[in-house]
Length: 349
Image 1: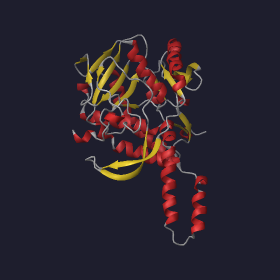
Image 2: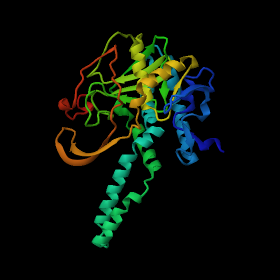
Image 3: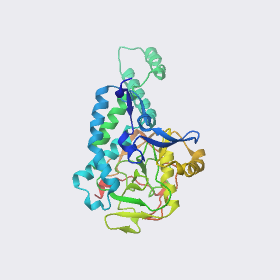
Image 4: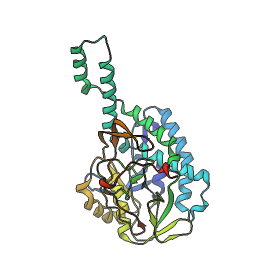
């Protein structure tokens, strides 16, 4: 089998940020909690022809090469003021690329892709004047047999995500420096979006790129996680020069790790097998709440940038992961559905 046939949706260089030998990684199966001490990196977070053509894999490998040096620098960075403007943008692009490219991202978008495609086909059938009413009904009733090209949708979503990375530019980056004896872990969907400000909003999406209160977690090693926050809605306690927070409470580490367990699709990874019991213990706490993390698809009111109603649209959103993200170093309000009103961060940037 060609090396290009085994296509990774989490790059091998990222695994090496956590690996002790550069070749293997400890892994826990998200479905059953079984752990393994030394899984080969080359076989992790990958599938045969996941992106299709070899040319796409080549292009993605080139993109990874651009991002890898920036992420390695962040892993060892002690002061975010050292980060150049160019590296800051590369970091945002790396985050968006990694968020969009995974198996979890592809799977979660299936409901919306199916719905939009079938709505379009139904509209095309209904406006086709060469068809009789009975023929239209017959064709529409057969739409469930139509198979959507999810790879094509996924590649377009990846492209769009990288292009929109600048929308995260107002979020403040913070390095979380793990000062405990428990590691940061990561899953096969390692970039996690959350929103503690809208923590009790259940009926709509609050994880959009421009949503007020957005938080992004991206582990960089067992001792380092990059956090991006909306400065209008969060106050950081005990922050040091260079936007660094020393995390000393085990509860904080566990909460951040639980995000990774929920975000993952098939596997959770960690650096040292001596922590296998710890990783399995937090997996056990969350196991009954784990889901496939599919987007919700609803028909809902739409609004323009001023919040003016614009009629009904088919709307999809990713529900927040079921983790109570109460961190000792972050202060913020928690709003629910009754307090929610549509807004974008661009309105106050």
